[in-house]
Length: 275
Image (tube, rainbow, N blue to C red; front, top):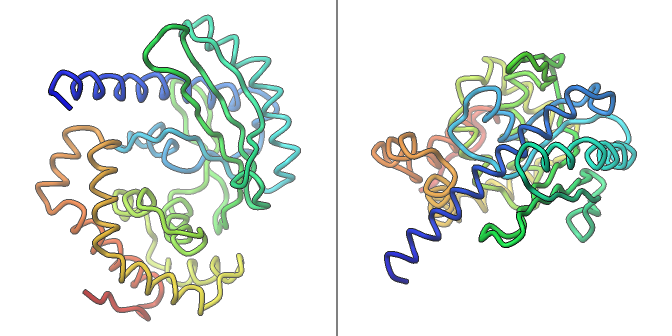
């Protein structure tokens, strides 16, 4: 690949991120100001980006919803078709479509996914798809509200958010490096009693000690792989200045090792990080 092609691909990727964030902001604003969004808690990477000026750019949106996931999915599809698609067209000049996701990932009883797709005919960006995941996370605290430009957003507490990243490492089929990076970035939000809270939450969702230990073993054994994936996320999803600073401080290895220390501490120190 020549330099011109590389620069062009980078430019397209950056434009995809820019357009995605504009659509994400419109989507969460629509939900936050219509009845379908009442009681829905904004969580995940875009929550950090929107409410905490997080440095990692996320291409999806996540919500915690304690009720019927399928019913809420259908409600959001209808709302977005009625309100979001016209907004995307008038404000961004993009065509749009919204549908309930299908396929193996969407068949999990723990999540329902709404897919928002936007495109501009003839543009190099192609079709940009933004998943909106409706799921449940264990919460120990009452939900909080934060405001951006006068819009009120309901969210899980800072402590529940940070702990959810630890829970996700053991609850997902495969630990994801984006959770590791988010945990590293927002580790200061973990309360002093996180060990007991995390233990209760893991029991609440039925993660056995045996399953937890197997996940831990696999993470330790796959240290080099996780480091490479973290470094790829830092390179591709983190804003340039924070990314450079993370690399200067040790990059993926520093992040992974610190995350394992945090997780070990929150599991009562029962795990040791073998190198």
